[in-house]
Structures are given as C-alpha cells and as structure tokens.
Image 1 (cartoon, rainbow, N blue to C red):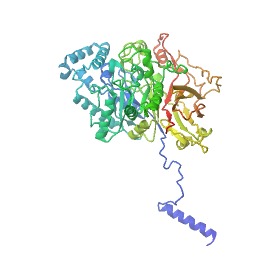
Image 2: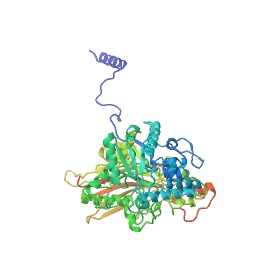
Image 3: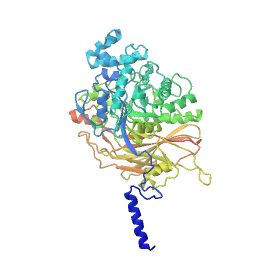
Length: 624
C-alpha cells in the first residue's frame, strides 16, 4: 500500500469515526482541567446576619424578615427598616440568616401582645414598655440580658413550640431561595451564651444540609445551657440523629471580658485533651472581624505591630461591665493561636486551631458593610445625621465605634451548600473588613522563586504544598537535613476598591525556652519602597480627601505576589503562619456620613481607615 493511499484511508476512517459520534483514543485528555477538583471559585458571603425575627433586633426596630435579608444579599433593592432604599454594589454568593435561637419568635409574641405574653407580669410590662419607642426598647433588651444572667427568663420566651414553628418557617424560606450554582442559603442560627451578664460567648451554628434535616431538632438555646461543651454535645446528638453535618463559629471575643479563649473549661476546670479536641472539632473557625470591632490582635498584646491599633472595641462586655487589662490576653485571635501552640505542646491537642473569617452581625437584615453603604448594627443606627454620635444598643458605646465590617471569603469547588460548608470546615477561607480583595496562600517546601509568576501557579500550589487552613509536616532533603518551608502568596485588590499597601506574614511560634512568640514580616509591598535596617517600611502615603470623602489609587498596587521563605525557621519548634493584606488609606464610613449629611464630626472620630484581609493560618508541627 503506497503512502498516499494510507493517508487517504486514515482520513476516511477518522471522518467516519467522528460522524458516528466517536473520537479516536489518545493517551490523555487534551483539556488540562479534566479531573481537577481544586477549589477555584472565590465566593463572598456573610455567615452572621440577623433579621427582625431575632428578639433583640425586632424589639429595637428591625422590620426586615429573613426573606428580605436573603433577597438583599442576592442583589435585590429593598427598603430598609428606616424607610430608605438600599442595594449592594454587587450581589453576594451566599448568606446565613442566623437569628438568635433564644426567644426565636418571642418578639412577634411581644409586639402582638399575645395571650401568652399578657398572662405573664414581666411579659405584660415589656409589651407596654415597647409602646414608648426606641429608648424603652433598648431598656427591654437590657432587661432581657439581665434576666438571662439571673436565669429568670419568662416562660413565654422559652416556649419550644413557638421556637420550633418559627424555625421551620425560616428553613422553608432558606430552601426556597437556595439555588445551587448561583446563590446559596446556608441554614443556621446563633446560640447566644452571655454568662456573667453580658460576657460574649456567642456561636453561630451552620448546617451543611437542608430543611429536611435541620428541622429534626429544635435549635439549642442558652435556656438549656450556657456552656459551649453542652452545645457541642447537642451538635453531636443532631448529627447522630440526622446523619447531617454541622459546625459552630465563635465571635467577638473582644467583648467577652476575657472568657472567649480562657485556658480552662467554661466551669473553670483545667483544660483537658478531650476538651481541646472537642473544641477544635466543632469550632474550626473564628469570626475575627465584624461590626463590634476587630478581633485579630490588640496593641497591648502586639506592641511591635504598627497595624495592631485597629477598630478597637475594648472597654466592656455587652452589658457595659468594665473590662480589666488582664482580660484582653484571652480575647484576641493572634494570642489564642499562640496559646494553642503551647497547649498542644502540653496536651497533644490544640483547642484554638481555627481558620479566620469576617461577617457582619448586622441586626437590620442588611449585610451592607461597604464604608459608603454602611447601614449599621441595628435599625436605630441606619444612616442619619446624628447616628455617629448617638449611643448604640450596648450601653456606653457611641455610634461611631461601630465598624463597617466584615465579609467571609471562601475558596470552594462549587457554589452549593456542600461546597461552601466543606471549605469552611477545612478552613480554606479568609475574612476581610469589607472589601472583596482576592487572597491565596500556599505553604510548601519546593516552591521556586518564580513559581508565583507562572500561569499555573495555583495548580502548583496544590501540587507542591497546602493551602490556607492546612498543616505542614517535617520534611528532610536527601542528606537528612530539615527543609525550610516557603510560602507562595498572591493578593489582588477589590476590582472596584482601593489599591494594596502591603502583604504581611504573621508568624507565631514556641521558642527554645517554651515561650510563645510572634513576628510580623512585610513580604510584598507597593511603590518601590525600601525596608530600613529594622526591616520596617515607611507608610504608603495618604490620598484621602476627608471633606469630600474621596481617595485616589495613585499610590499602592493592584496586585502583590511573592514567594517568601521564613528566615528564622526552626524545624524543632511548633509554629503558625497567616497572611494579612493591608489596603491604602480610604475614607471611613464616618467620613461618608459627614459629607452626605453636611455635618462636622467630633475630633475623636476616626475618618480614615486601612481596610484589611486575614487569611486562615497554616500550621507547622514537627511531630507530624
């Protein structure tokens, strides 16, 4: 058979094969994405949002229902509690309407002056007080907090039938709006432990599953117990009964008066390995930033960190009980991560091995936290000329101290309940104070200096290392020498926001004397600045025009990328690393209010902010 005939025959066979619906077999698929299950979707959402169905929110003026809250998060325009039209600049990808389980449905009973309420002397008095307007409403909320602390909550608030009925109405709404691939509604609630009359030990309980499983048990309340260990037991019982999965996210240690990250149990007993393992299992995340201030670190804990003094809310608990200085050490995320290393050294388990996210804790039904679109903590804090100088629901806290924060960022395989929940569980998530900046963070031993510049750098990240939330094992080279880890990082600005100032790596470790230490490294920065002899950078500059509430992206960088190696790595010492990304200065929400309402803020009110993102850590454990 001559060559020309062979070519014609091969062409004929190939054409016939394709026509019959088959293709020739090749050694491998042409598409590089075939079989790739790496999380490639960056999804934005809020895991901590309250509607008018939360008793405290409803009493002080919230009108928006869970359905309104979901519609707003999806990008729809709604009317706020104060009658203002409001819409997000961009729709979110997921939402958790986490109304308080304590007293769920009680607000509706109070406002309706139902027979259950009016038959109770306390309930009748509260219902009548609510006719007196917002000031009296706040008094009712504070009386409820006090009654909880004294175990004197009226029976109509604890009514389980009312709670279950309202819960089932909420889960119906969440299933109705859940659209896999487009928008996800995760079912959840807030368990609101406040021992000592306002010490914040709240947790948001997030379900992986839908209504069919969520409805099988009434949400746990602090009427049952204020002890987180009892909540974990309830979570285990729910999983055993339904076959579903659930996790909890603590928040606002900065208003816990030292109780969020204590080195003992809730009852004051010495911490055990069982406790440490249970907390790490059920609480894989921490809400590091939200409306009630920032919870990463504090100047007294991180005196060498120039960015530690940020959005502080550090004087009291939720019920205005003053905070003493020694309480601060067990309230902030960075110190807890360090303490976790020490506990792991002693017990062989780390109770504070958490990833980090942000969320709002808004009690308006509006997850609106952009500085120029901030609708406050509660209905009385929605935009108005005097909201910055008015008091908040928490007595003693002035309005301007509220932070327009935060958001949860999730690296997921798909926009579904399973895809998002699984990312939360494995801690491949991060939090921001509001902007939607993109952050990826990998740790490994074989990253080359130019890997971060390759087109397939994310694929390399998973192939050569672990993502944020992961753990590094000890690795040696061919000669038995310990390898030093390197970290591949890329951060990109919010597409409609501010440029980036710098990327930092925050390291915590146990030194040779068994003491916990920390250090913040600047690893990538803008504007060709040079580090001084102490390794410090000069400030990026400030383009904010406070009077006009504007800024310019003439400074900073749109993206920052690097491969960084720890210059002080000790293979024998436990450590963690997380990324902090800092934006250039921009107007704070108080500056936007001053411009829009034509008012002058008091001199103590901050008008400029440097927004930021916090990645989940990567842990190094030499025993692995």
